[in-house]
Length: 496
Image (cartoon, rainbow, N blue to C red; front, top):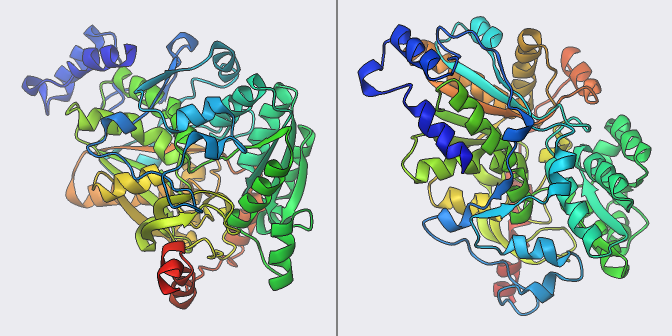
């Protein structure tokens, strides 16, 4: 691929003979046509031309040392077949979900839509570095320049396009904070499709402007759980005051799609094809870092279902597995919903009502309803099976951070870099700042790369709560967790 060639050229900027000699590195960089970003470099914003935008998505599965466990049919407990998925997904996406092909061509019509915002910029966080007085060099890949203000259109557009090619008239989906729901609404409008969104009640109430954005693009939006579906009515009968969860909203969206022959379901995270589409983030970041002769020592990303994290991390993990770089890769999640750090690696449903296949993943239990933290996009009981598998292989690390620490980091970032982050990536920013301060103590000149997956301009009420001193960290209830674990499918089956 062209990016590998570019990486190879810029790799010459740091030969052993000039390691530790900034002036000679800079001269070598200039001769190679690159402008180093640190420590004596000048560049702050790294932008690729449109003709450098990736033309292929990267599938990490063929490069892993062991294949991930297959999803199971919950009725037979046998590996899922393509026919099992046909009622809710188009065949084009099913083929991507199970593909063993390393690279998959991005159709031209999708690339033409991507050009509305891609390639996205990579920034050097110079002012944040100065505030922290750290020798670390911090870079962030900013996905907030998309029409929706987040990374989610990277997969919403291809999902809508593949459905459109197969004659689908309507897509249903769930959304937490609303970035995914808005993205699919936008994509459906581009391809003249209907869109029906079930938004988690906690976010529906606290983030009204995202609902308005979805409606601007023509979507029908319900607070979940709703009275529209049997799944929603069942939940409301048990707990009429529930704040909802992504698992419940998924149940409702899947139920509607399964009952309508003209409709299919679209998922904004978790599944392989979703993470596949997001790899344009990491592929571009590789090219942009190569422009300044840098390779990350640490890559940090927030995780809810895993799409943003996988999109940035997978291309770098490919380079690490091939021996072309040595980069620590760290996932960061909320303390209130810590699937990677406190969940169990077992087969579980992707939704609350048990309408989805069984997925082998780190899970808090499909019956677990997270407390209503402000990072609504991270309130999911499970983790991407692919990221869960990679964690089990020891290829990534995981941390959990309370939301007050995240908002403190967001304030430092906004007051130096000028961008108000969405609550979700503040988790990655908090860990980035912690690592940068560790570098201050140790004197290490680490290169840290993180993903700023969206802006927080529609999340300002959450910042207001923080600024007024009313933001509370909600401790995770171990009792609540153990109760959810008891309802895991394989444990319930064994207990019978």
